[in-house]
Length: 477
Image (cartoon, rainbow, N blue to C red; front, side):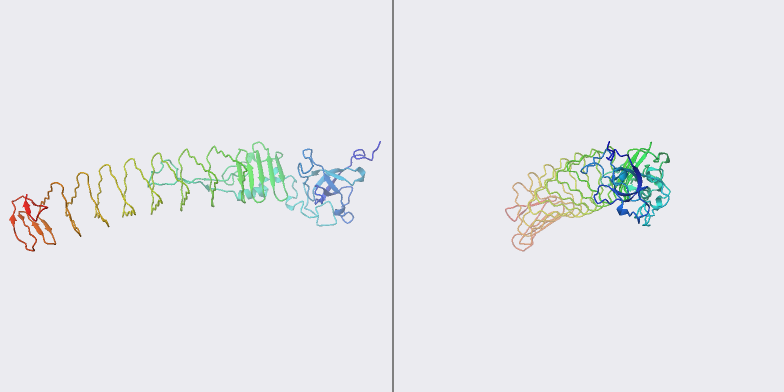
């Protein structure tokens, strides 16, 4: 029977140290110095003459066309175990696995004459001497790991939460205690949760052998912790970005750089409880389609600087109950087209100082009921053209003290019916032309077209003088 055939010539296994992992074929091969086959003397057997050892991949990896896991793991200085595919010829080593231990001294690879060490003097690291090669996070040494130190140092505390505005000028404040008080929230403690700084529960700390840790050379870490009472999933990046799902189901995501989320289709978000968002910088929201906002409760908005809104289409708003507006300083309103304002009930307007109104076109005011204007100071009606006062029924002018009527041109009084002018005290009517009439308490005086002022008649007591519109005659009523 043929024995010089792979698999029939005996199984030769070995143990050695990886001295080079930079495989030019990028198959995950490593140059391994094997005990009993290679000497420690690198002068006689340099690293670059060691055979390339192939990695043996698990059955869960296809090892074909990039399917499966990348066969990388050992570093320079790693102890590995394997066998020779070619048996006693010992030229085709295969790595089956790595072997950890407890380093007693740091790497001596700087001495180029001695093998079985990391030539780059990187491993084992000085800080890991005299402790197991198992990751500290997998053992009960988590608090000594720099990840825990960084997390505790840069833990975010007392993040302020938005509060509703107080607008007592238009609405009464809420009576609920603490409704307007500023509240805060803090980042939970790493691993153990809880918001109080520096506090954690020793009874639920991760313990060996339940925490499965996967770590990279630059500090990337994954934890799958199955410790009873402390079940967690943790991902860590050396920049400080991490994601952790704690035992109670809380998830902490902390991004030290920028965060980008891209969804090729839709995204649905459901928050069953409260949602607090605090943004220290600017926020820009660009919606290229329609935007819907529905609030079943109250809606509060506080803007401590300016608010600028531009609507290129129509602005439609319906308020089913009351609407209140308080402007502390000035308010400007401009309507480029028509403006229609309808008030079904009463309409009140109060102006503390001057009220100026400029109407370029016509101004028509129609009152279907009484109309009253009360002015505590002067009232001036000034028209650059005609000013008409008309009434379908009665038209009354009254003054509690003086009544002055001045006409710069011709004055015409046309009475279609009977007219009566009653003077309750002495009255003086002066015509700057050719007529002067003075009506005293008991005296009626008149003048014709000359400039003489003669006494013509004396009226009876308690009678009122009336002037006809057909002649210069004053009659006693």
